[in-house]
Image 1: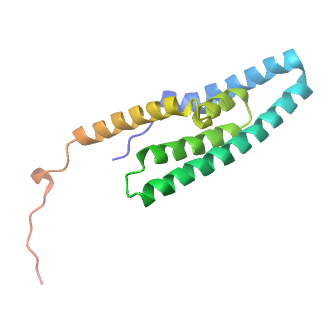
Image 2 (image 1 turned 180 degrees about the vertical axis):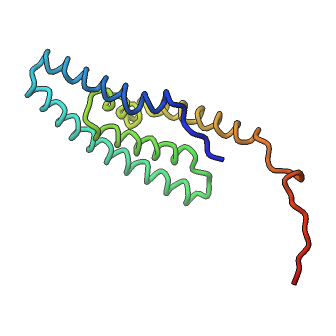
Image 3 (image 1 turned 90 degrees about the vertical axis):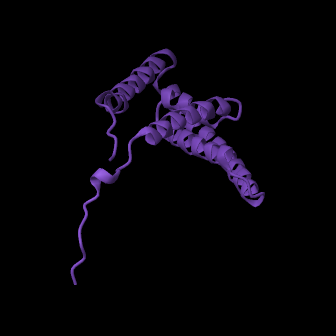
Length: 146
């Protein structure tokens, strides 16, 4: 059984965040000017793509080393996922998404994001383990007829 996201999560993702991004873009545009805002967004995107390429290759190398050493690459997989999510946020136009993307990608802040990701996954997995699995009451007994 799939769990559906609550309506407020969808509202946040598709209504509140885009409106907040547009508001911040307009406010920054009023302060520094429209052309400087566009230039800042382009520079931010270029810097973000370079950073994602650098950190993504580091995460890939760390994953390969962990696999070669025959150990579980939990940290390396989390870093790879964070770099992927952060890169997606960095190429999305907007300053709020860029800040969130930088938190996921920059090596100084990635451990904090990794702890948050680990906590979310631990809570989700704990919820899965406590759910009741189908037992004998769901078994339909019958005979095979040839």
